[in-house]
Structure formats: structure tokens, C-alpha cells
Amino acid sequence: MKIKLRYLVYDPDRAGNDRYYVRLEVGGRPVKKRLLQPPLNANGDITQAFMDEYWAALAELRGEAAAAPKETPPPRHETFDWLFDQYFRSTAFKRMDPATQADKRSVLYRFAETAGALPYKKYRKEDMERSQLARKATPGAADKLVKVLKAVFNWAMKQSPPLASFNPAIGIEPINRKKGGFHTWTSEELQAFRAYWPMGSVPRLALELMISIGARRSDVCQIGPRHQFKRNGQTWVRFTAHKGRNLYPVEIEARLTKEAVQALEAAGATGSTFICTNRGAGYTIESFGNAFSSWCTAAGLLHCSAHGLRKAAAIALAESGSTAIELCAIFGWTNLRTAQIYIEKANKTRLRENAFSRLDKSENSESVSKSSVAARVETNEGN
Image (cartoon, rainbow, N blue to C red; front, side, top):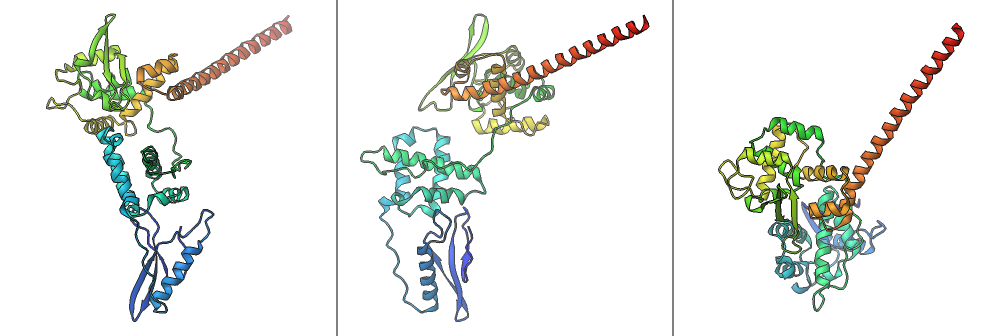
């Protein structure tokens, strides 16, 4: 929030964090001094500490008072820089997937650019809310910072002896209110993709595999002949989900649809994975995601994605009557609430169809009834 005071300059950093300076001209040249006290309290009022620092800085720049002694920085073992370093060295962090590690490092490094030298034990809930709001221009990033810091402080509190006595990120409401997430493919979009990419093509094989077993992109780019087996004459795949495999491995078994089997046979995949590049090599997770996006774009489906296929598969199974437990078994979910989301969507679709079906029957019944009455009246009048 910008505060208007004479000689006060508002100059946020690249991350959107507030920075205030007192700036004026002395002897024909500009001089300035940064203010470090928090400008606002929880009620949005200007703090007394900020105003005291403002007047002191103004007096110092004018030469009316001696410069205030610089505050002694906290020891390194009390700073965010030290806490993050300990977290990165921990067993809990090293057990995470490399991609997850890289994501968390990126979030914490950006936060440490401005807060790294500050004492983490003095960081309060209102400070966390202020850091979140400073990033409101990118609400997803703002909420991710809260999520990552919450994990760091939870880890710190579990150490022996504890490195923190409370978690300032607990109870922080998200500011990203976007609902729905990735777009769920419609049947028309599936047919459009199939019309553009025929049987025998890699894009078609990728789509049929994902819609068949609801696999994530991190799984479908690594599934191959070694995961395939027969059960009651039908083709199945068995694999360990890539997500969470280091902490909580989940084994998934799924039966391939006839379309997926046909796509496999038409593609004639001979590599270690079903989905391969033009050179016969397997895709990485990121390269497959990029490739699939380009395949969707080529088919004119700009808002479709690989994850949207997983959602479409879940809804299709829910509409067919699958229970929450069955969906968890197929998709590898450990929380029934996740499956219930798709069941509720399927139920809403079913309820809408039932409502309009009854409306059609009601209108047809009334039409027949009125015509019958009219026919009887005309006959009686004629007689």
C-alpha cells in the first residue's frame, strides 16, 4: 500500500515487496535513506515506529541530528537464510522428487532475496499475510509462498530440539480464488483430436492411453511394455505412480480400452516406453507436456491439456457409476474427497438430464391431452 507523505518515495522491489525511502535535495544533490520499520499495522493504520523512523531520517538527511546507529543484524543461525539452508540439507527435503526440490528452492530463494537476513523467529502471521498481499498481482505465486513456508516451519517445529515454536503460515486464507483448474475435455474435443491425429500416430497413442487409464503425464511418458500384462484375456498395465513415489509409493493397475489397444498395435511401439520421439527415445516429463500442448494446438484445441484428459477419464468413470473407492483404486488417490469431486460433477450432470427428461415427458403428455380434448369437443358439436 502506498503512503503519501512529503519527501517519502515508494519504490517496491522486483518481487513486489514494499520499499520506502525519504528523499530530498541537500546542497543541490539528491540524498535518500531507506525506512525499515513496518509501515502499517494489522488494521491498516500507519505505525508509530514507521513515523518515528521517517522523522529521524528526515532530520538526519537535513543535518539536524546525528545519524542513528545501525541496528545490529541478527546472527546467521537466527535468519531465514540459515533456516532454509538447514531445510535443504534435511533428509525430508532430499527424499522429495528433484522437480519438487527445484520448485521449493525457487520459491524460497526469491523470498530470501529480501527476507533472507531477517530473524525467522520474529516472523509473525501478520508478516506472512503482508508478504502474501505484496504478491497479489500473481495470486498463484502468493499462495504458493504461504504453502512452502508453512511446510518449512512445520519441519522446523518437528526437529529436536525444535527450530521454531510456532508456524506463522497456519490459518492464512488463499487469495487465488480461481476454481476448476485445468479444462476438462469434452466428447467433442476428444473427437476433434482423433479426427486430426489418426491411428498410428504418437499423439493419438498418447491420448488413447491417457483417457483409457487416467494416467498423469509423468506416468504415461514412462509406461512401456514391461508394465503390460494380460488378465482374463484383456490387456492391463501395472506401474508405480511417479508422483510421491519416494515418500508414499502407490501402485496402479488399469485396463486398456479397445481404442488404446488398437492405438498401441497401430503405432507399433518397440522402445522401452510406449510413447517415443521421432528418434525412438522416450520423453521426459516436461518435454512430453510441451509436445502434447503442441499436438493440441495443431488440432485447434488451444485450451486443452494432458491433465484435462485425466479429469475427463475420472468424470466418465463416475458417470458410469463408479464409486469413490473404485476411483481411488484406479487413479491412485489416497483421499476419498478427491474422488467425491468427480462423483458430484457426474451426479449434477445426471440430475440435469433427468430434470429435462421429465420436462420433455410432461410437455408431450400435455400436448396429447389437449389434442384429445379438442377432438372430442369437435365431434360432439358435429353430432
